Length: 217
Image 1 (tube, helix red, strand yellow):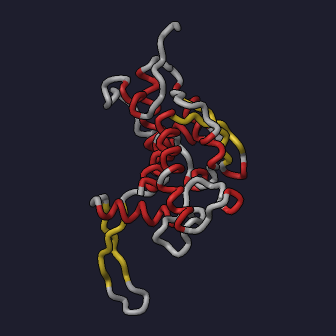
Image 2 (cartoon, rainbow, N blue to C red):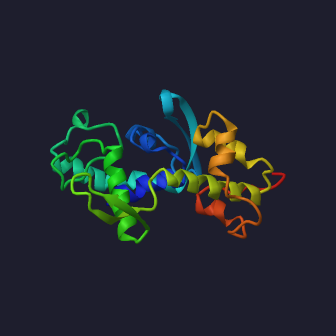
Image 3 (cartoon, rainbow, N blue to C red):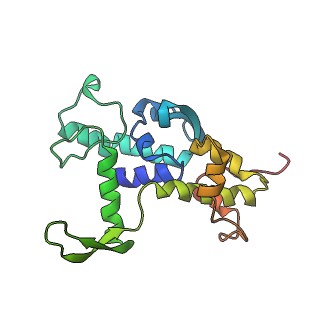
């Protein structure tokens, strides 16, 4: 479903936490300025603390397409034809499930993400000992989890900001990710950056959908 790809995009292109995408409201996206390169929305993170995040215009358009297409089909299949019956959350359980039309849980998306990693071969092998039989086996487990996409956002944005002349890119990243302490941003999310930009150009800014910065404009 395009729903699953969209959720992943909200995490790697905006830096949302697992629980934050589940709180996104249809009205928020529908009220966005049409064809804007970037919009600003408010999300609630840990402790229900609100922060403003920047969202690429292309992601807004893709989300609107999901709302009008796949999501509308789910609501129809669930018999939720009247607006008052419909959930306000954007991402819903699919039409092929008994809970169709209900808000999608974080745990369900984590399971979908894990299955995708395993199918793609992004795995590691872990020793497992059965507690009853004592037999040892090796299991395949996903190498990544959805939260890793926040790290992807941080690294992409770091190099994009550096390439566009920002000497303190971590400040914008800290604000976007909602970190109380700058040390969390620098020592955890940006601990592997350094040296030369592996993307070589400022095109990473295009990749995450941010408008180009014009010097001295």
